[in-house]
Amino acid sequence: MADESSNPTSPRSRSSEPLAIAHGADIMPRDYAISLAAKGGTDRLLREPGTQGQQPMRGFEATYVDIVDYIVRITHRIWEEKDIGYIYDTYRHNAHVYDDFGLQYGRDKIVADTVHTINAFPDIRLFADEIIWAGDEDIGFHSSHRTVISGHNSGYSQYGAPTGRKVTLWCIANCVSLENEIFAEWVVYDTASLVHQLGFDLREMARELGNRQAAALDVSRSGEPERLHGQGKPRYLAAPASGFDVEEFVRRSFHNIWNRRCLREARCAYAPSLLFRGSTGRVLYGRGDYQAFVLSMLAMFPDAMLQIDDIYWMGNDEEGYKVSARWSLQGTHRGNGIYGAPSGRQVTMWGITQQEIQQGRVQKEWMLFNEFAVMQQIYRD
Image 1: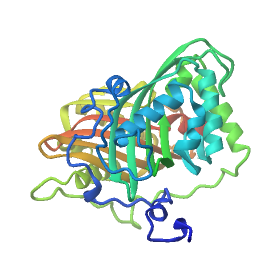
Image 2: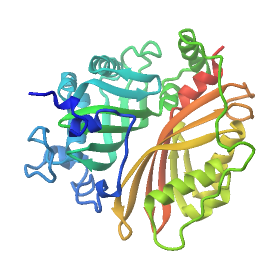
Image 3: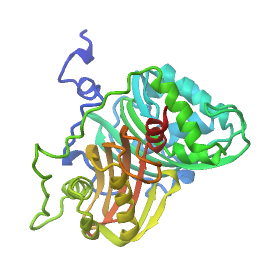
């Protein structure tokens, strides 16, 4: 029998490359029938997981009724019940995991990193706050899992000896799973907040770890972010004359605000009562605070160019939409701000933004990015 992975038309072959992701509106859930809220929250889901399948899940263990159930329960089993070996059953052998420290390749590396983290925080708890999903059993299920992590540092970590301190931080993990295996994951922890809560000097720790990474690489060369076409201007994306397309809305607002520098667009795209949660414990209220945050980033990285690398959503016009957008940004540290005097260093940052959209405006937003990694790039010697 031929190996299915060698057939370019097979579902496994189409979904095996984590960087080549294409979505169509037909794979987006049109309602919230399969959602964390519909299940009554994480605690109820874990106590009463259900037995009737809610969607086709070829190749998944029969115990899981849908993708939300799968993500919540494998997370709980691995991290809180400490069945770390279950990773061998739920991650592909060559899984790609991207985090603050770059690409973590292979299942064994995932196991080792999980052991390390649970050893550092033996009482770790992961509270699912939201799961946005899309996809199906043929192309794979895409899930964006927003979590609050809590625990006491009573074991050694990569940052040093145990501090005994309690930490609470946000995390968003975007996974792609097929036939009971996660084969690609992008996970962004609020690492800067974690280091700060542990009591370490954030800049010194970023410098120390940044130097370790720089020693293994030639990081002296950098190019130029291509935000402009030649000597032209970045185009302005106008809103459609009628109707609401959630993907068009998100792409347009990201581009006009971040690349075109039209911060006025925030007044159209965001609600006056906006609640924004960001990296390193940022909590902002209202459009004015959001505009100030964007301004501060653009002032530090005046040539910044942002692109959306992946986007999916669930919902409809009446009930609203929940969106997950994974993005990357390049820029050169040429302006003053929270990262200190300009270093001239080019940095690469990436993040995941989740939005709740009602009546054509963002009501809530969670934007986590690899801020500690950005600091490592800037503060290294």
